[in-house]
Length: 149
Image (cartoon, rainbow, N blue to C red; front, side, top):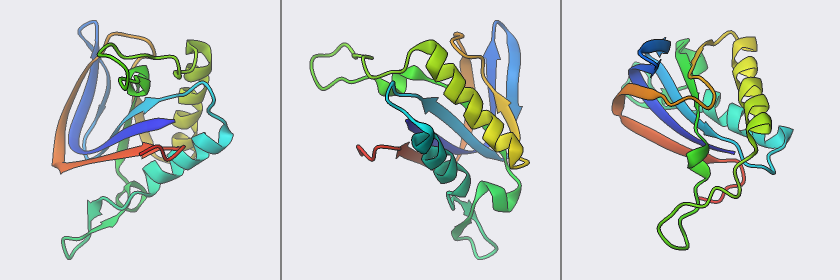
């Protein structure tokens, strides 16, 4: 499982001219699910996402997590994170999970966040989305449950 996590002051997703998800201070998570992902990959990625200490404390140091600041989460499914461009220039998506598997794991990630009391907004699975954000910092973190990078 791969995630691009961006600290934001605001972010939104628009599908067919309608806002489907919108947050203020928190994290925008672009989430890609691999075909071999398991419950362990889900737990790892979720734990890293919610536990990342990327928000500033009173001393101005990045010491606080999303949970510490009661921040919001905007989760957007993005299979293109699994694009492999090591050979040629056209990405191969052979490692991406099939849509029914990816959607189930994406929904589990969202459910886990809601169970923790996090205000979660979402995109629309498999939709053509416009994602707007104001990256705070900028702070962008890459997470790969298989530690490929």
